[in-house]
Each structure stands twice: as C-alpha cells, then as structure tokens.
Image (cartoon, rainbow, N blue to C red; front, side, top):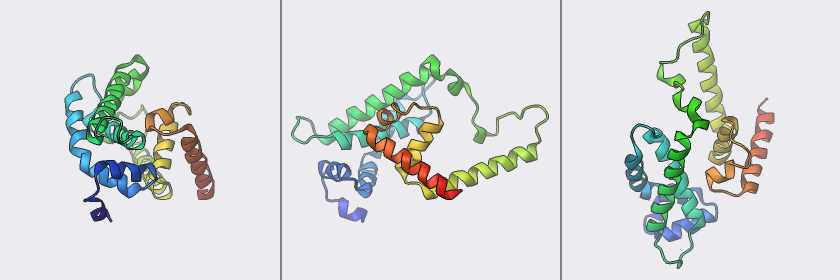
Length: 190
C-alpha cells in the first residue's frame, strides 16, 4: 500500500492524513524522517532530552504540520513541516529544562539496569514485576490504537487532560474520545 504513496506529493499525503489515513502518515513520516533526525541532532547535548525523545517530538510536529497544512498559504509542505518540527522540539527542550521536570530529568530509567532496588527488595520479585509490566504494556499496545496508546501514556505520566491535545496537535474532542475508548477497552480486558 505504501507504494501507492510514492508518487504522491507531500501536500497530497498531508490531505490524506487530515482525512484520517494512517498509512499516508506512515509514508509521510518515512519521507521526512531524515528532516526530523537532522533537527533532533541540532538539539542534542547536555540540557536536552535524548535524541530518541526529540525524534518522537519531531514526528508529533510532523503530524501537526500534516493536519494543519494549507496549500496555497505561501509555503511548501517541506518548509512548513520543518518549522513545525523545529518548534515542537524547541518546546520539548524548553520544557525539559524547566524546574517542573527536574525529577523526571534526573531519574534513572528502569530499563537501563542502573536502577537501585530499595533496601530489602528481592531482586527476583523486582524482575518478575518488570516482566509482568512488559507483558501488560505489550497487551495494551495490541488492544489500543496508536493514538489511544499515546493518549493513555500521556495521561498516566500526569499530563493534564487539557494539555494532551496540545502535545499531540489534536483537538480536545479527539483526545477525550480516545481516552473514553481506552477506558472502555480496559474495562473489557478485565
């Protein structure tokens, strides 16, 4: 199916993304991944999120560009997308450096193996808990759409309900509906 998109102009792909075509966004992402990675490298260094996190933010910026692009407004899609990606990453870097994120920024990843167990914690139990959490995460990823999973992830990370649409570049209603579907699917999984 992605072969169908190779001959499409970026503006056409953006129009298909606005219509809800996930494959069009996948094709657009593949086409502009070089741009996202190049901009992420510009921000890399101390005081900035990891390059992978910046790349994720850049892809969200690319999605926002696709959804909001207006052909004939004076800029090509590539130029517009570059600005949206850059602004999204700049916002992430500024947010990362804020004192509100200090605890999160200074934390140690559970996946890194650097995490220390609290005194008296059994390493076997900790490993079993990690395995159960990984299984639950895999089950959630299989049951939820990518949008639903991202909304849930932001919600569980403490993001305010009104902040989620801003981070994803979507409407409040879209995010509220996604959160409602997540709740319904979680109830059905019990």
